[in-house]
Length: 244
Image 1 (tube, one colour):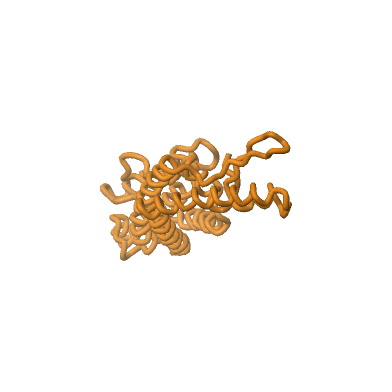
Image 2 (cartoon, one colour):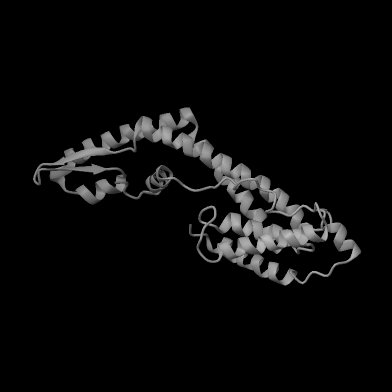
C-alpha cells in the first residue's frame, strides 16, 4: 500500500515522537497515569477516538465494496462494442475519451461513432440508475468522509505529546494499523515495530499490573481496509482509465 505523502510524514513524525518519549521516569503521578487515564495523556485520549473512527471506516469500506460488487455483477462496466469495418476487428470502448481516440473527427466514421456513443450512453444510464437504487455512490461518499475524519485524528494524535507509556504505545499502534500493507506484514520495519509495541505493553503492565496498553488488548487483527480487485476497477473506471 502506498501512503499519501502527508500521511507518511505524520506517521514518521509520530515514530520519532515515540522514540523521544521512551525516556520514562517513574513517579507517583506517572504510575497513576499508566492505568489509562485519558485526561492525563492527550495521545491516549485521541487514540480512543481514532480506534472508533478506524473501525467505522473499515465497516463502511466493506459496505461499499459489497455494493460495488453488486453493481458490477448486475450491470457491468459501461461499454460499447464497435466493429471497425476496414480492419475487420471488434473494439470495446468504456469511456468517452476512447471514442475520441478511436474515431477522431473522421466524417466517414461519424455514423459508427454516433451508434457507439448511444450504446455507451445507454449502458451508462443503466449503471447510474442501479447505482441510485442500491446506494453505491452514497455509500462511497460516506466512506470517504469517514476516512478523512480518521486521517484528521491520525494527524492530531501524532502531533499530541504522549505523557505515558500507554500514550507511546497508542502512537505505535496507529503507525502499525495505518502503515502496514497487510496484517502481520513481514517487511521491515513492521515486525520490528510490533516487537517494540509488545515491549512497551510488557513494561507498562509490569510497572502497574492491569494497566491498559493500546495494542495489547486485541484478540485478533483490526479490520483491514484493503481494496479488492473490483474496487480498484471501479476506481479506474471513475477516473477514466481503460478497464480491460
